[in-house]
Length: 372
Image 1 (cartoon, one colour):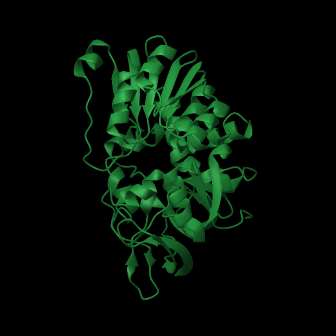
Image 2: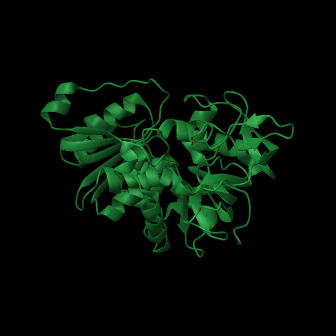
Image 3: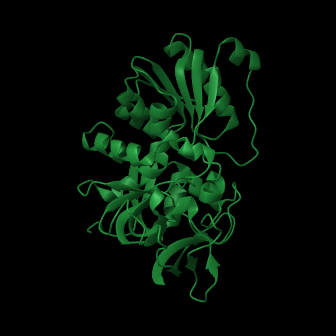
């Protein structure tokens, strides 16, 4: 087994504990990745705080990027030395997967939150042999190495800044994909995002790429609203000071064509629905605790022909969408690096605190140099 350094969660609410652990060698369909950097996502905190039923102890982290060190004997997708982004896991054999709806895999929850491979096995243990849950989103990348199925690794160009790219595997592709793949925001349309974190601001950049001409951000953090304008928002609303529904309806002369809710708060979802135009569509990407319910005015939705859709991982097909986002970044059209602040693995609890306080929009935990 390979010795690794990783951050574990052993109790509800944390903290992350940096420990020496041991990792299996790759199975025939797996690859071993030397992790260069891993983004920290709201979903990591959701798992830490047990808002979702995730087994403990576990190594979290699901926005990894790194270099392939070893490949299993049946792996054909990548080879040693390739630079890769790690993304979510899907089974590949259920009905949604077979029709290409990867983010709605029937086995999505156990594969991404179950703390094990599809067969229930784990690959990580303590020095004394005690099992540690892993394979969080198929990767558990808050560590120096990650063992990943070839299905959820995405090859990226060697000249792309690998330490930046991990968040493309979840949070960034969720926001951008919600706009481009799921909502299908159109040129000349109006778009409003309720929540100006990493997902919401990624949606802003994608809406600009898609050609929306009115782009509105509602949030409570002034610095996020200022950054939103820099990234392409045409209007911003501080929802602590102004009714965001009234503001959006005034700016758009009746309501937005598309809205996105990324805060995970039921009352904010209601705002996103109420702010829609006739025939508008609201996408939901915020992740509250399991069992949380929300309400809306049924007649307002029905008589206005509004649509409300759930969106997972931006409905992204990662092998196609992540390289596209990398190319947009390279061209200067998707500057997601403006969301980022770097931390060491030993600073992981500070990164989580800064994220939750809104001090940092997208923390990235830097683990190694990117040289192959």
